[in-house]
Structure formats: C-alpha cells, structure tokens
Length: 121
Length: 168
Image 1 (cartoon, one colour):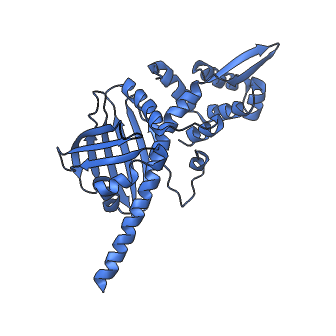
Image 2 (tube, rainbow over the protein chains, first blue to last red):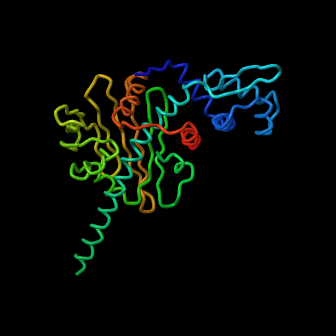
Image 3 (tube, rainbow over the protein chains, first blue to last red):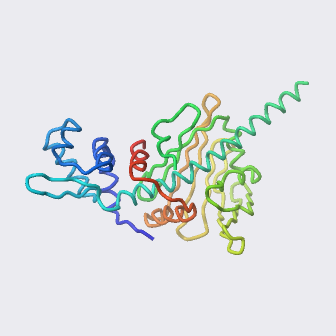
C-alpha cells in the first residue's frame, strides 16, 4: 500500500493547480520537449517556463536532463500516475454508483407519474 | 474508463466531480435530474439503495443491506466477491434531515470516516454534495487505495488521467 508524505501531496497538488503546468504535463505525455519548445508552445518567456518546469520538477512530476545546451523535459517516473490514479479511483467508484442512482431516480419519477395518473382517474 | 467525458460534459450526462479538499477530507458532487425527495429516498430506502451502491463494475455482490435511517440508527452492508469471505461495512446515522441532509459514521475500523451528504433542490434537479472526513491523512490515503482494490479497475493512459485532473 502506497503511503504519501504530506509534503509530497502538497507539492503535487500545488503543481497541478496551474493550467499552464497541467498543459505542460499533457504535452510531455505526448513527447519529451525542451524548455524552449515548451515556452514557444505556451507563448511564454523562457524564464517563465523555467519556473513552471521547476515547480513540476520539485513535485517529482517532471524530470529534466541537460544535453549540450538543451534542457529536455520528460514526465516524472510514476508519481503523477499514482496521484491521478488515487483521485481517479474515487471518481470511478462514485461515477459508476451515480450512473446507477440515475436509473433509480428515473424509475421513481416514472412511478410517481404513473401513480399521479391513476389518482386522477 | 471514460475520462474524456468529464472534460466535455454533454447536457444528457451529469458530471461527477471528486476533489481532495484537504489532507483528511474528500468531496464528491453530482447533480441528479429529479427532486430531492426522490434522491433522498434512494439513499434511505434499503431496497432502492442496494440497486445502485455496488455498481456492477465493482464485480461484487451486495447481499445484505440493513438500514435503520434515523438519528442513532445503525446500518450494515455486507458484500463480497466470494460469499465465503464477506466484507461488512457498518456504522451509525448521526443526522437525518428528510430530503436535505444525512450524516453517518463508518465504524468498521478506528480509521473510519464520517460521511455527510446534502441534497439541494433547484428547478426540479438535485445537487448532491458528499463529504468524507477521515480521522487522519493516512486513513484517507489508505481509503483511496482500498477503493482501488475494491474496484479492481485498470487505469488508463496518463493522457486520459490528465484530462480528468484538468477538468477538476
């Protein structure tokens, strides 16, 4: 069973709270990219993108490697997946429960309507 | 998994959102196309409750569902993948306010949560907000893992997960 430290959770959720950083993760999910490429893609200064990548790196969501003059970013090992999977489990459970509950509510509404019609007769 | 649906809700489908509110709290919201009294009934009538609480995708059978829905009343749910090894969930109702609010405890362990469900009706629809408060952060982390075990789900691609997170 995976246990998280408090700081880990906080860092990850803080990192994910920003739309640009989520976009960067999505982008890196498709392909590795350099900071310059990411800055272009998100129409941002190099310094701004470096900051975002730094936050993601600290949270363990992204790793970077400098080859020559280019710093390449890629998704971090598995922490994000664990994080996302944690929420997704709950989401799955409740979404499927509530889809079933929809059916129950529809059925109750149908019954009420039918009962209402009978009473009027 | 159908995470993509979450980012582009269609009018037909009500979206379930799940948020970790804090280290010890989890929030779930969902709108239902019906009045609060009917949604409330589905939560408080054992006959109706058992029709939806254990969805088929969980691969489990709820074979016993007792609910004494009044303040101080107890509930007990038993289900399993294998009837020889039943799992029991039980606790006490702390608050029962018809058509608007339910609070109950989960007493199967010392680390059980307190669950609050509110039902708010507007224009014939009901916004349901479910809130779970755990005694510790570790208990909530573990509960998430437990839910996964219970669901036995496989997880999709990272892209899909990111879309889901992005929508929250």
